Image 1 (cartoon, rainbow, N blue to C red):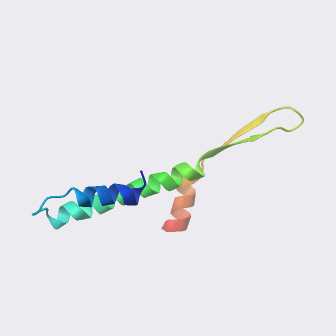
Image 2: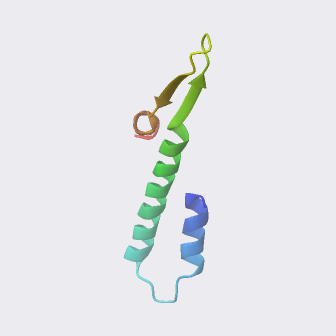
Image 3: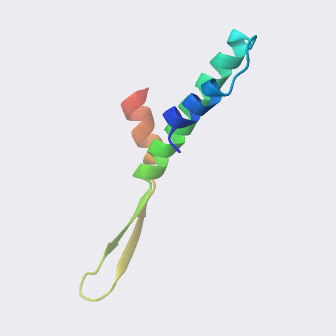
Length: 71
């Protein structure tokens, strides 16, 4: 579920009389979900086979990418 889909679900299930603070909290939570999804997409594993050695390198730069791109 994407952050937008999660937020849409939250908004569609609210009841009359919900405070603006609740909505702001839901938006903040959606932003955190989106941040995590972006970081997870950037944290990936690359496999290279150099001379049959099967080098395995893990790239974990998702948080760095998010901060440089969105902050």
